[in-house]
Amino acid sequence: MEGQRIRVAVPMRWGDMDAYGHINNVNLVRMMEEARIAGFGVPGGTGKPGMDPMVDLFSTVPDGTQILVVEHRVRYLKPLDYRNVPAQVDVWIGAMKPASFDICYEFHDPVDGGICVKAATTLAFFSVADQRLLRLSPEHRAELARYAEEPVFRS
Image 1 (tube, rainbow, N blue to C red):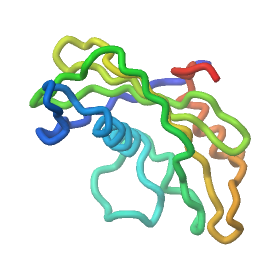
Image 2 (image 1 turned 135 degrees about the horizontal axis):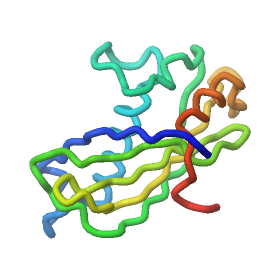
Image 3 (image 1 turned 45 degrees about the vertical axis):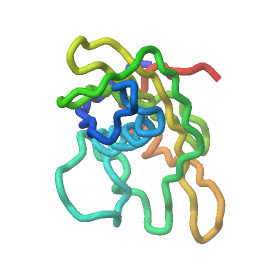
């Protein structure tokens, strides 16, 4: 796969830190969401206008379609210590299946650049009216492919 990664800065909040001085595992999943939104945007009709995402993959999803989290996978390689500067997070598209796709993440320590966490989120488009998953359209598949690289995890 010959895609490209998107690097986003995700702030670490004081409250994200646990007693050991690093980002708590539960709060890291929230940071995955922040990285995903900063990189690829929000579904159309949600929130108020603000800063544009690096790549706008989700605002064109039709009305009545939700983008749902199917699964998170997280591998902690070393602690992501709290710092008063944002973590640097690479996001890209991993595996694409007929009705789902993975967003992959690498969290880098903002000071030494080391990789602290590798993770993936599986997302799917869901029809509210039909109460079923939707297949990825050729247009969405082509757009996702621009940011596709090897997945973080092998199934």
